[in-house]
Image (cartoon, rainbow, N blue to C red; front, side):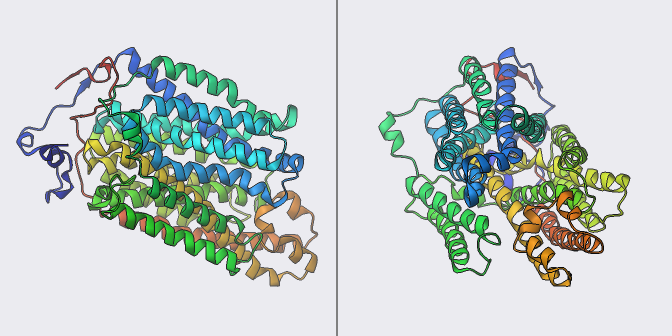
Length: 555
């Protein structure tokens, strides 16, 4: 890529922080671009949205079916890997998809990802053993990695930076819809059909997506060298180090506090090896030994993009912090049933989606993102702080209002995180930045579930000695208070032990929210480091729609 283009599109080196247009265009601000998009753009967008919905649905549908799956397959302790291996492979493979998309274009990697996901679903549905089921989930995760990353990358290819936020917000509505409907559909499948249909449902949906993508996803791809030469450009060593380190970390987080104590050597060793492996990965990527890095060091050379990746990790972390522990509060302290707790979470999910639409639209209208990030993290920090007031006597009106404040902050930031990162980077790094963004978000998901769970279990175990009933202590020790939290568990004890157990849940959850304030506040400090860049209206991409319909503009 010519140097003058990089200078024009990588504005973070400018001291004024006011614009990211070339210097000869700064004197007269351009008028908002008027886009007349053809039917092909909208057809592609609908296909991408449906595909994102499919991946999101599968990420959550297994949650309610897991107990039935575990019993039917005699999974015992391996049941955890039915869920975790999906997120593991999804996180580890996303950067590789970014590299493949640059080498082979967007069309066939996207179609291949959906095909792999669909095949994995068939393997899971027909599994005759736990190992076969885990293998199928591994294949599913590999496919989901490509779906999650390429959907956003293709949108970036088709839209100028200033317009991406509003479409990302709209896409996020489909993702949240899949996450919300997943547990409901999973419960209905288990109750009325079979747990196997939580996977078989993806066969007709995946097949439909494949047909639609094959028909409408016609995107350009610059001339490329022979396939064998392209394969040599893949960062094999970097991808292997990354996959191994993520696997090691996830092993420690899966078994720490459940099968083993956190102080157990196997937990400490795998966690340390995993974290050291990730450090080694970044050192290798920045070294001269890595000719074609899967995560180019250019992504982290300026403070705006680096802060954007950190903000992405923290936003994802605190979103799962609440998404997993609000239902725990509803069931263990307010004594709601599982189905009712799902209904109680609806305000959170709905406002999260609305917030994404609002945040994306604001970024497009204002042409800026920093102020949106700041407002969002302020709302998150305040909301997390207010969660510390939750107890058994909190009224419905109070917890609804406070969760709405928190969810609004999450949503407005979510829609323009990638936009903020790419505002500081040239367009030719779209694939690398999107792949890294997806990976960072996946790591935020893993840590966003594991850290609060460890805090909760540790706090609960410390408080257990206050219970006079030894039977209750045994029933709730070593992570069981978290795994089995429900109204049925609490009601299985008589007063005054019952009230004391609720009190332990209140105190342990309060500690979870208190630590969460630190992470939300850290996110606020991080986004303050971003420069106040304008979003580009000029769009340079070698991967637009094949017939040129993506950008018919008048400036």
